[in-house]
Structures are given as structure tokens and as C-alpha cells.
Image 1 (cartoon, rainbow, N blue to C red):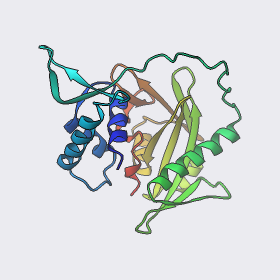
Image 2: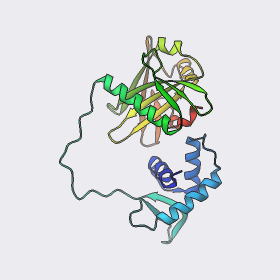
Image 3: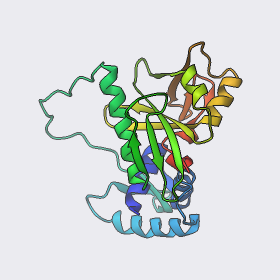
Image 4: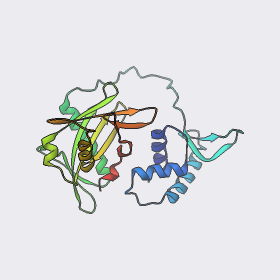
Length: 241
């Protein structure tokens, strides 16, 4: 368990200073399959951060209180400084070919599942299921992957009604890959939640269900079709169990 990576991940997502207890709580809430208590993880994070923050190359910093002292157990990420030299090489243009984008998304999800000890297979013929994954207990899951680049602040996805109805089981999960210039974020939605959103008219469509995901910077929430808060389902692969 990379404690510093855990702290950096949570602080980067929350974009504010946090106490080690809160960091531990947020991380375990997003990864319920990890068998460790909040108290135990908090102590480990406290020790790791206290040692690391002393280094000049540390990504972390302590937080001052009103009297100039340091708040106990509270850390933040250091602000990134501008590089001395800017590379003259322009960033590659993102492809607009949906075939390349779709396949890249499938392999990105495969990679995330492999890191979590799933045995993953890519389906040769796409009939509504892109991946079949088995956990360490031998339980199988069917996964449909959809990938999109951001456009006008929105990631737009479509799920065909026939494919949804043909794979409407508790073992089915939908992973929507939100591809960014620096990293991917993954919205993982269980079949049951997608079914509920359709029933409640959060998601609509005739032959294809339309899903538009946006990020509200003020509330720090991911919204589905501008209505449903799906933040808790972002990057939470622990749901697949």
C-alpha cells in the first residue's frame, strides 16, 4: 500500500487541506474492498506524511494556523511551480476516430481491473458486453465500456436500448471512461443504478439512452444529465465485487 500515493490522490481530488483521518475516510469510502480500519490507515498515513514532509522534494506541506503554528495532522499538496523550460513539442491531437477511442478505453479499464487482481478477457464479438472479469473468488462480471473526450465541458455517452435489455443482470456494470489530456476518470455504474435512472427519467432515449456527464467545479460534484449526483461512483472500482 503506497501511503503517499493514497494521500496525494485524495488531496488532489478534494483540492483542499485535509486531516489524516479525513484522508483515510475518503480513501476507504472509495475503496470498500480494502480490509483496513480508518484508525489503522490514519496512523500509517500520519507517520508517512510526517516523515516525507521534511524532505525538500516532498509534494506535501503542513498547514499554518492563525498564530503561525502548524495545524496538527493536517496536510495539503504544494502548489505546482512553472517549469524553467517549456518543451517546444506540441501535444498530440486527440483522435476523433471512435474505433481508436473505444478500444483505448477498453484497455484502460482492463488495466485498472488487472491492478485489482481481476482476471480480464476482452470479448472478440461485441454484443453489448466488452469485458468479462473474474475476481479472486471466481465470481464473474460483465462490463460494458464507453469512452468519450470532453466537449464543451461535457462527456457524452450512449447506451443502446437493445444491448441494455439483453444484459440486464446484477453481474453487469457500465464503465464510462472520461478521457482527459493528463489522466482518465472512470464512472462505474451498476446495472441496477442505470435501470433506476431510466425509470426515474434521469436517463432518456428511444433506441439509445443518452448519458451526459459534467463536473461542477463549485460543488465539486459529477452530475449525470445535470440531475443525478454520481460523484461517489467515480473511480470506485470497489463496487465491482
